Length: 252
Image 1 (tube, helix red, strand yellow):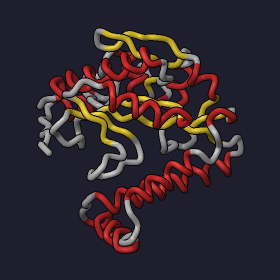
Image 2 (cartoon, helix red, strand yellow):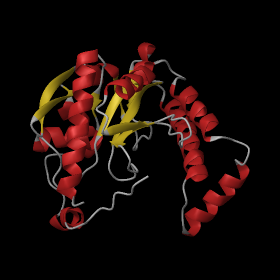
Image 3 (cartoon, rainbow, N blue to C red):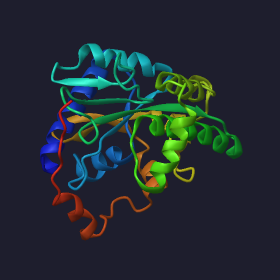
Image 4 (cartoon, rainbow, N blue to C red):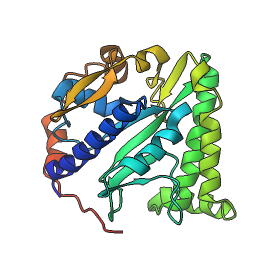
């Protein structure tokens, strides 16, 4: 597929997810580049096919369960599937195909402590849990591959399911409902993914590729904190790098 064909699929997946969440009363929001894409392009960033949503950790498993039951048959949820690789976060893809490239990721929005050092400590532990699970499940090359093999050897008797349960426990360290601050996703970028919860929860429906999704009303503050001058486009050579690519979507 070329990038626009990828975007046609991810936009349709996103449209279905947003519609289901709206109908079922599930709290969600576009995050990261998806928030930026909605504000700057009212649809996918032309040179990017990635789509990310955030759902409060307190209702995360309920939201995933709703999608598993309500999504059209042509799409599937990759999460804690029986006889499949367990993932820390849920991912929706095209049924019958791997989700390496073609997917919509759904990140947990987690409660975080107010103290900076406690925040760093929490995210270090979360990163470690995710890294161990990736090392156990994926094949890497070079120096990274050697490190992954050593980690995999040390985790010989530890299942992916156990690592995912560890991830869940860490995400629930600071209950979402009682937290003033929340982290969008699982990996902070120099503290720029930690925000007051009220900024994330107060959302509105915005145009995205012919339908509507929710993003925070405080998008300007969030995007400025995350990307600085977010309305500026990257250099043309960076855009063309993706626009001229073909993507192979592998069958299961």
